[in-house]
Length: 334
Image 1: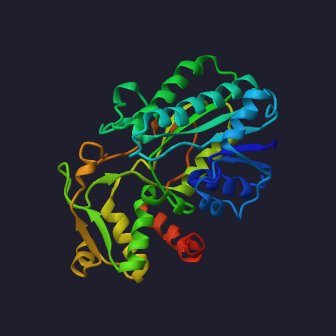
Image 2: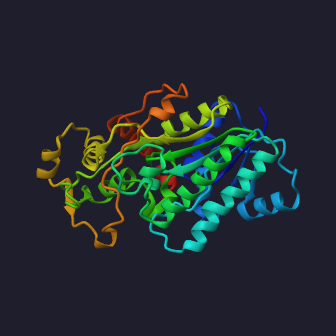
Image 3: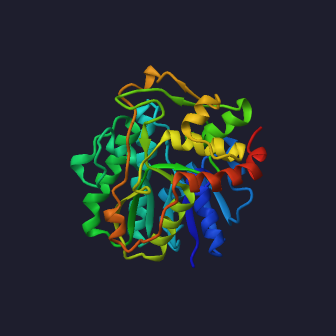
C-alpha cells in the first residue's frame, strides 16, 4: 500500500480514519492539518503516522513542486471549517471550496483516489435527503460551501481519471472530538454535563417538535470510518453519497442513553425527567431559522455500491462511546 494523506488528520473524523488505517496495518500516513488549536495534537498522539505537514505548507508544496506527492495512494480530504455558525463567508469559501478544488485537481492530474467530506448541511430544512439538486437548500454559508464543491464535482465526474467519492456526513459522534468545543456532538456535551452536574440539558419545543423531540440521523464515527475504508478498497466507485444510518432518532434518545450508561440503569425518558436527570431549556433565538429539526439519510445510493454494513443504533453507539470516554476523557481535558 502506498502512502496515504489525511487532511484534517488531527481533527475528529480525520484522526479516526487514521486509527482505522492503522488497524489495517497502514502506518505510512501523512497528516495535514493546522494546529492553531494546539490541543488537536491529542487526537493523534497515540496513532502511527510518518509525517505531519501544516496545511499552508502543504498547499505551497503542491503549488510550487507539482509532482511532490504524485506517488500517494489516496487522499482522504477531511480538512474543513465545520462551524455552522461561522459568518465569515470569505474564510469559509476559501477553506472549504477553493482548498478542495486544489486537491481534487491535483489528484486528477496524478490519478490519485480522492475521498472527501461533504455534509448533510447541504439539505437545509428539507425532509427528503436524496443526493439530487432539487432537495439541496442549505441554511448557512457552511452548507453552501459544501454544496458548491459537490456541484463542482458533479460537473467533473464524467471526465474524471481516478476515483472521486464525497460523503455527506449526517450527525457524527464518537471519540476524538473534544477539540470541537461548542461544535462537538450532543453526546459529548451530555456526557460532560452529567459528569459535572448529574443532569443533561436539551432544547425545548421548537418548530412543531416537542421538547427533545428534534430528530436527527446520528451515526457513530466508527461506522463512518468503515465506509471510508470500503471506498479505499473499491477504487472503481465514484460519486456523492449520504452517510448516515438511514434511521433518525430523537435527541431524547441520546440523553437517556448517556444517563443510563452513567447510572447503570435502564430508565425511560419520563423516569429520567421525574428524577431531574434531564432538563429542557428554551430553544435559543439565535438558531431560529438556522436549525435542522429533522435529518434522515436516504441510503439507496450508498447501498447500490455494494456497501452492506449495518450501522449502530444510538443506544449501541453511545455504549461504545461512553466506554471510550471513561477510559480517555482525562487526557483531553486541560
